[in-house]
Length: 256
Image (cartoon, rainbow, N blue to C red; front, side):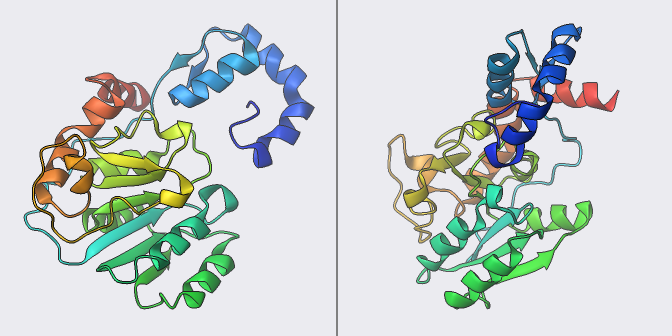
């Protein structure tokens, strides 16, 4: 444990256990972190080398890319409804998109559920946002396979496994611009980190556009082109996370 990653959750506790934690870390043969962001925090807190081993998933059951463009874009969130996940940002952003053709599924539950439901009612989005609660792994996989975009409005993340799973299913990722997603999202390749005021704006003009030859082409395709989602299947795990084989090696290491 170290401070700064999730201040509301860890800073007070870290002050209490810091002497013990520093002793444990100083005597450890090897220390590891699940992401570049967490690695940097650990090095700053404990002043020793830290090996980065990214969270791994099994790619052997990755589904094929979608066969056709969906008329209604399906946005999905997976996680705990708490302040860290910052769901009010997502609901308010979706409310600004009332004229576009979308539906959303927010998988999970938690202490902020009442706030989320109140915002949904306030913006009259009950007919467009589903709240199925916690789901089994197979049910989550089915939801991801039916979706186009994973929305991550989080205030902070270490390395979000939900994002890795989403890439496995070929989803584009719309995320808040936080350090914890650097190992997952390649800007304009498989997703787009955005400042809070821009969340969901650039990538949810969901009507088809005329093809342009510019560095922003792939970003403009988010969620509307099966060709883009096919690239999400081919690139993200090995290119964005592993930069070739690190992702699979991490999974094999965890499986062993």
